[in-house]
Length: 132
Image 1 (tube, rainbow, N blue to C red):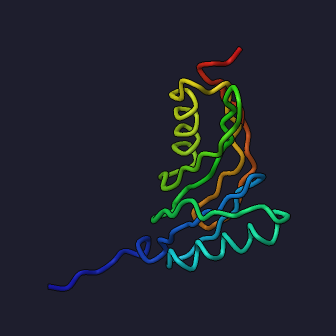
Image 2 (cartoon, one colour):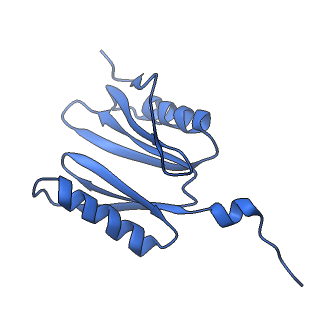
């Protein structure tokens, strides 16, 4: 039996993320080890000596991004990837913030389209359940 892959399947790629205290970096690619290594290299080059940690690999990357979640005593970065379109990714971030019972608010940092291009962000602030 012969199976044929659609052109969209050939275009699929993953995305790897690395983080340091002051930022998040990413690289797209088909090989998780190479993409994560690339993200870590970017982090090491730009994070001014901070420790860089490979934090997430997603395949298929599709629409991806990350946001900062502000909590009462600190903040964290949350990554979401694999959304089918921009609206679904935006809605996922908004729902994540609303569902985090400790979140004061969330700030969408970066949205990445399937080609790897960072997009201009509008409506980037979401209130959390602990908002004053």
